[in-house]
Image 1 (tube, protein in one colour):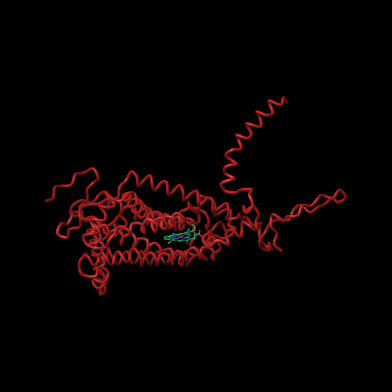
Image 2 (cartoon, rainbow over the protein chains, first blue to last red; image 1 turned 120 degrees about the horizontal axis):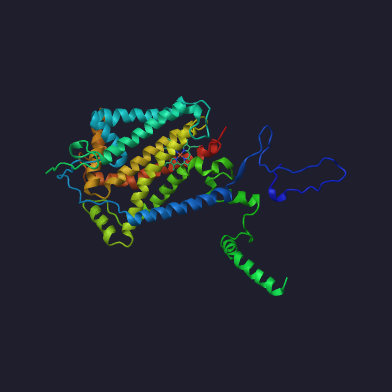
Length: 181
Length: 251
Ligand code: HEM
């Protein structure tokens, strides 16, 4: 039987009994061998939160877009190669690896292996421990490996963005680049 | 109590009630049709095609902001914003050389709010790449990819790659120096793949150099093919979140 909160019955205590029915608990499924459900309705709890958050994000984007302009350089010119020519920031990791090794190793093989490893994650790490907690202590190996991956990804991107000058030489952000033609 | 005192109290109470009354009148709380029973709260979700993405009830744990940080939802929101601003940009944009670049200049200097429109699209796109990455980190650090959610992680990797490809194809469209050389660098890497590399690059660019054909191909990929693909994958992703028992939580 489904019990909705609006047709919940109220039971008057009977003065002749030493026991009584206290409450019929809400539930949308049979509660055999289950703890009391710890659920709330999506409306309004979740939907309102989503709407509020969407408004914050939209306002934030408008503020950013008011003060910072998308870049637009000179019209494309195949005969005028900028030095250095940089990939979009999310591919700077690739470009970085290519500069250390070769286009095949850094641009195809290593990224390909990384994607395959990424796909294999849930099929390798299947032990049901630490689900639902941030940085569960039992999962320290997995968490450490992932942190190395994430920090590495971000580091190569930052190097590519701020520390690569003409001919892909390394310069600190505060160092001047030598003059090129 | 003196009648005058009672009146002034009532006046203050009325004043204090004003925000609440406005709120209720706006959102129809307490009015007929307001979902104030469990049955109505349920049918509001199941009877609306957009809200129907949600389950009717969710675990209290899933609501906690410090668990998901709304990252997946924010990625989806940014995708919606990108679709909206992207369609509006399409009204002003010709995927041809050199018109594409001049359209960018027009957006900046002539079209009303054109610069804002372009900025919104640009920053949302960068934001989406970053947010999707952070979402993936959240899923990892909370162990949310473990059984039964393995397949949704795999779908997620597909979403990550599609997000990167969308961003990359969009990068060429302004047809400025930044766009041209970034895509030249990027597609040169594809060249290095054994056997198929140069063929793939030729297919992607519609030639051997980044030229008008490449611009048209990137445009079609960016505005039609990839958004459709990512839309399908997102539908599967959200559906699987629910089939796998909702957002993960303590076991
Ligand atoms: C366009 C990109 C993506 C969108 C729009 C998206 C959206 C979402 C949303 C809305 C949720 C619900 C929970 C939450 O907000 O955190 C979710 C959960 C999930 N996502 Fe994504 N996601 C994307 C990319 C990814 C990626 C890159 C991965 C991993 C490689 C991933 C793996 C998962 C998994 C495993 C869940 C279930 C988590 C749980 O049950 O706690 N998703 N996603």
